[in-house]
Image 1 (cartoon, rainbow, N blue to C red):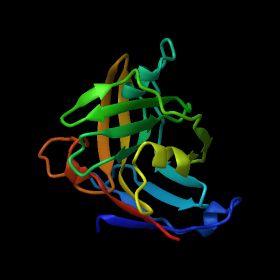
Image 2: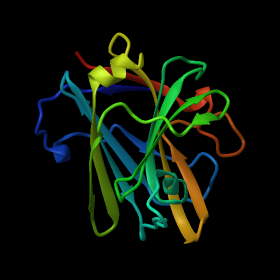
Image 3: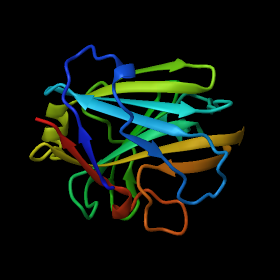
Image 4: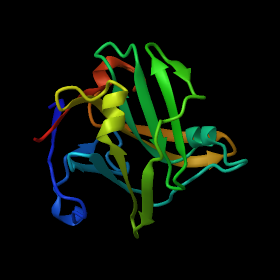
Length: 202
């Protein structure tokens, strides 16, 4: 199923009462013991709210100078939004539990512009549980519309996680999970088949 229906709710929603919209899976790994990830979302008519519950025995974060590019070597969850089906123009948000955001604009294939910045301040929060971290955030629908991403209450989007099993300097052993199974034999989210549709409930 490559379509999610994003429910409309009021602000201040109790996340515990919202059902899980999808569970990420590991398209390139048959290890059934790998950590699970649950994703929830809703919108208010003004903002899109999202929450990842990323299960993990340990959370590994790379820190050196605290630059946003360090997110590449860290445990993280990711949202991608595309203007078109061919990924001629799309935007990426890679968010780690330290609330650092690797935001960039991209074009197919893997042409990254990492100096680009998301045009609004992202409201993010992260809390730890005994067996997971829970990262929540919100994005204004106006920003999504201004970037030509939100069209007729529909977004073309991808949902991902990079789970770091071990970390030594910039050498991170990462297992990649995704909402959809991309049509690739090796880990790659930067292709059209990793994106699905989100329909925002009116």
